[in-house]
Amino acid sequence: MSSETHPSGTSRSDRDCLVRSVAGALAQSPHLEAVTIDRANESLSVATMGRKDDPRIEAQATAAVERGREASSHHECGLLNGNGTCATCDIPLDESERRAVVIAADAGRTTISRPTCPTAPRFWHWHNLPLPRFVPREIELHDDHDHDHADEWKLQLAAAGLCVLFGITGWLLESRFQIGWAATTSFVLAYLAGAWFAAEETWELMRKGTLDVHFLMLAVAAGSAAIGAWEEGATLLFLFSFSGALEHYAMGRTQREIRSLFRDAPKSATLIDAGGHEAAHPVDKLRTGQRLLVKPGEQFPVDAEVAKGATAADESNLTGEATPVEKKIGDTVLAGTINMWGVVEAVVLRPAAESSLQKIIRLIRDAQRLKAPSQRLTDKFGGGYTYGILALSALMFFVWWLGLGHPAFTSTEETKSAFYRAMIAFRQAIRR
Image (cartoon, rainbow, N blue to C red):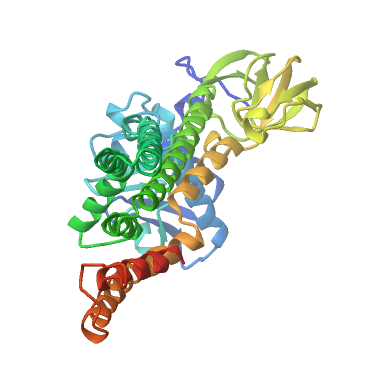
C-alpha cells in the first residue's frame, strides 16, 4: 500500500478518518447507500437500495467504520464524540470529498450517505449491526496501582523473616534456657510479624461479611497458642507469609516485564512510499501492506514480512531464545524483536493493535485476571468450608465438655480439656 501525498503536504494515511473511510466503501459498493452510527445504542445501520441483503456489503461497511474509528482515534473526531463537524476538524475534507458524501449528524447519531434524490431514501432497506469494537494499541497497565504495591512483597518477606527469627528465638529460650516469659514474648512478636498481612486481608473480608482461608490460618495459630503449641503456630504463620511474599513478587515481576515490553516498543517507524521516499510514521497508524525500512539496532514496530534484504532478529524478549534467528525474504518478523545487523524492507502484515507483542501482553493480563480451576474451586467452597470447620470444632467442644464430661478449659496430667481437644481437631482438619 502506498502512502500518497496530499496537496496540503500530509500523506493520505495521515488524513484517514471516519468520513473518508465510509466514502471509500460507498465508492466501492454501488448497492451501499448509507451508513449510520448510533453512538448511544452502540449500533451500526447499513442502508442498501431495495431489499438487497448481501453479507459482503455489510462486511465492507463494518470494516470501513472500524478503520475510520481507528484512524480517528488519533485526533478528536467531532462526528464520533458529538462535539463538532468536519468543518472544525484539523484534517477537513476538501471540496471534492465534501461533494462525494452527505453527512447528517446530531448528538447521538451520524449518517454518511451518497448524494441522491430526496425520494430515494424511501426505498432504502436498513440492516442493523453491532458497532465494531475498536481495540487501541495502548493497554491498561494500572501504573499507579502497581507502583503503590511494588514493594509489598519486600514487606511481606521482611515480616516472614522476622516471624522465623522470633520463632526460633522463642523455641531456643523455651527448650534450651527455660526462660518462659522471654520465650512467650518472642513467640508473640513472631505471631505479630507473621499474621500482620493475613490479618489485614481477613479484616477487609470480614467487613464484607466473608471469611476465607486467611481467617482459618489465624484461627489455627491462635488455637495453637491457646494450647501452648506456640512453635507450631509460628511455623504456620511463617509459611503463610512467605508464600504470600513469593506470590506478590511473581505478580510484580510480571507487571514490570509487561510494562517494559510495551514502553520499549517503538512509537514511530520509517515508511517507504511508492516513490521510494522515506518518512517517519506513527506506528499506531500503520496499515496492512505498507512498506517499512528497519535499520540495524532498531525494533521491528509491527509484525511484518521481509521483502528486501536479510538480517537476524533477536527474539529473546518474546520467546526467551538467546540465539538470534536469521531472517530472509519471505520470513516473518515479529513486533518488539530487534533487527541485529541488516538493513531490511518489510511489508506490514497486520496493524500494531493486532501484533504478536500486543497479543502476548493481552494474554498475560487476561491470565492474571482469570483464576485457576483450583482457585475457583477454593473460592466456591472456601467460605462454606471455613464456616463448616468452625461449626464442627465448636460442636466437638460441647460434645467433649457436656457429652463426655471433660473439663471445659482446664487440662490436667490425666485428661485434656474439651477446648484443647477441639483445638487439636481443628488443627488436624485444617491440615487435611
